[in-house]
Length: 72
Image 1: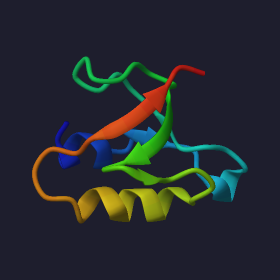
Image 2: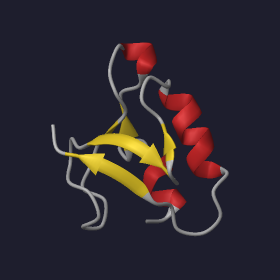
Image 3: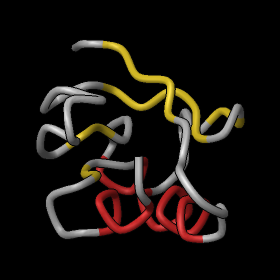
Image 4: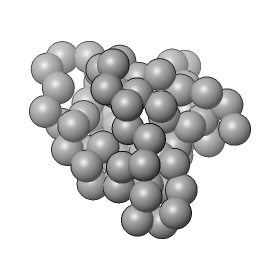
């Protein structure tokens, strides 16, 4: 999935600063449904990270970004 799709305001939400796991805010081109928890970005665990760190990681990826998600 593209970095731009994840960086938009409703792409990813939550984060440790809100006491939550990062989750998908909107359906992402059929790759993830709304509200799925994001466990990994490019094979790196993002559990317990604030949203700004996860977004920074996504923005530093080249090309399509691989996410591991699970339904809530």
